[in-house]
Length: 180
Image (cartoon, rainbow, N blue to C red; front, side, top):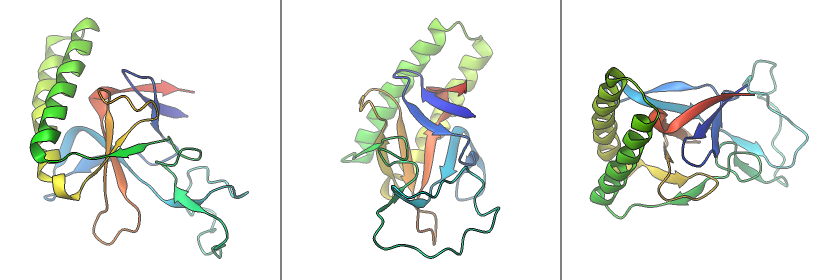
């Protein structure tokens, strides 16, 4: 199993138990440097365990027990990764966070002795990420990871047209992949 952790806090933020997808803008163009997962609502405390196969075994038509609490499989504290929702008062506040966060990633990359080519790639992708996230500002919800470090990475979520559960997006440069 692969788990992505925040590079600054080591918080586990997402795993490959959820299908990792590329983020695309409204035109269908890939936003380099970002990944996303589709979340789903699950019964908290039930005996039903989802191993990430979706409805591969035909369990999708089971009745829902209204007495069982349903939670989001990504953001919930016990079933998911323990996200805490936050807000940005304006696009400017979001831009300021991203600017500060990308500076912190740049410093991390430089101390990690990455190549100049990789640094150039980061700078280019960071600009595209900022444009994309600021353009989606009104549609987004923002989440801190389990440690609630305001200077670490965030998850950005939104509901695609017609969806009943959100997708969660991540800035890949702020994550490290760990194999368990």
